[in-house]
Each structure stands twice: as C-alpha cells, then as structure tokens.
Length: 187
Image (tube, rainbow, N blue to C red):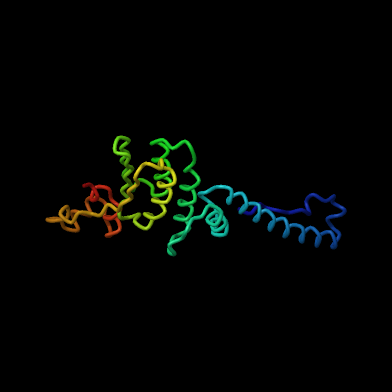
C-alpha cells in the first residue's frame, strides 16, 4: 500500500516557493514511494503465507524442496511451511501439524506404535503432494518405523444412483469439488 508522500509540506513556507526545492521534493517523494514499496514487499516476504515467487524459490533451494512443475504460488508456500514446521519433537500432534500445513484437511493419519507403522492417506485433491509428504514423513518418523503414504481415491460405488443434482446438493459444482470433498473419499 502506497503511503501519501508530500515532502514539500515539511519545508518552511519561504523554501516551498523556490522551484529547485519543489523539484528536489518531487524527486525525493518518488524515491520514498519506491523505498516504501520495497520495504512492503520485504515485510510480506517474512511470512510464509505472503512471500513472493523469488522468496519461495530461495526457500525451496535452501531446504531442498523439489517442484513437480505445475505448483501454484500458494502450493509452494504450503510446501515450505510444511517443511519448516517439521521440526522436533516428533509427536502425533506434530505429524498432524505438518500434514495440515502441507495438504490442509485432505489427509488421514494412522500411527501404530506396536506395528511400527505410520500410514498417511492423501485425498485425491492433493495427490501431487504424495512424494513431498512421503519425504517429510520419512524424515520425521523413527528409523525403525515403516512409512506408507498413499492416495485415497474416490470409490465409484459411492456414486451409483446419484445425479448431478444430488452432487449439487452436497456442494459439488465440478469433479474437482467431488475429488476434494471428504464425504466421497471415505472408505
């Protein structure tokens, strides 16, 4: 957001009337607006939710995130946030926190200490994140624990006998809405 700048008003009245000082003030105002814009971007880049593409690229190279190629800026921010939140201690709430940061509410998590198994199900809407979720879960899980990350596909049997009107009643406008809706991904 650009702040209103008018440096000439800070000069004494007799200086304001001199053309050279008016031009100096105008040039100074222009530079000040540019500086405030840069500072605004710098401030936005301090937060995962508002950083720009250049900052995302820097973070991805620093923490080793590999891009699939068609991620949006928001998806890239989420991946960085997920990797950042995956720090010690590794408790079940921490696994949930990391998964929520990476894929939102589109996952299931089952941890069996007795079987030494960590199972993550990623809903179809977030299926492109499977590899990055696996990498982080593998890094967080104990070395003797197996990690399985799978995609939870919609079950076609759940759609038999339904029409688009039925899906519309459940808030679905497109197939993507159906893919993202937890109701259709229950096992």
